[in-house]
Length: 270
Image (tube, rainbow, N blue to C red; front, side, top):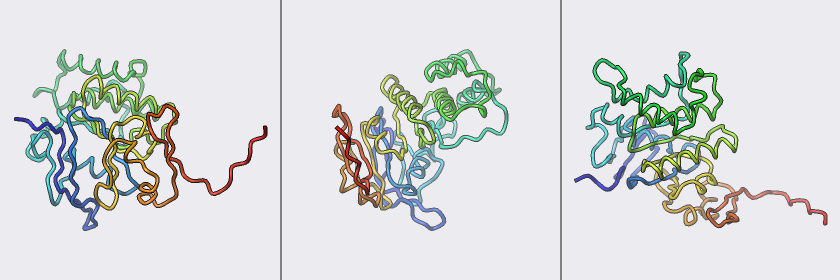
């Protein structure tokens, strides 16, 4: 019988060249859940995603995907069940958008590597779902940051994953493109039931688009729960090391975290 959790971490510890990054971390992510990883730079968000994906192996504790250790799952099978969208995706050749998305079908290809009709259908669905049809003929390296993000997500969708991991999906995007990418992620999660775990540095975006936030601090989990419960000013000041205030968004749906200004705002004239 399969575990009800898509992802389980039990007392996981990891270090780079003897420098501890995570220690004794335990976490469970249910199937179909949409969760954001938060925390200061260097707290281990990207490392945690790499541990979940099987790119890295913990030196203590265990990671389980549907009850199995990533290291025991054949690489092709693992790639069919979990997809990761990294911060950077370097393409050394002039691949078109369509060719990049086709790479997502690699784990499903048969021995001779030809795309079947089914493969083409899943590629077409990924193109349509991410709205990149109009740019599918263009060279990937010539795209804007927001367009590249969409293409990378389309490539991940072509894998037909059960779990989608995203490392800073809104990094270096303007505010409108950030909304487009996160709305797309929410739609994929709600309509397809894909389990989503995203490392995000923006607390307000996490609060707005994710049902659950996990904050890393002190090499482990400092808080875990709905944004309205977790994002408290006193707690966040301790984690981020600076004065912050938390306000309620006008629709009451999510809190808004702001730095405390050190100067008085000018009075408005009547």
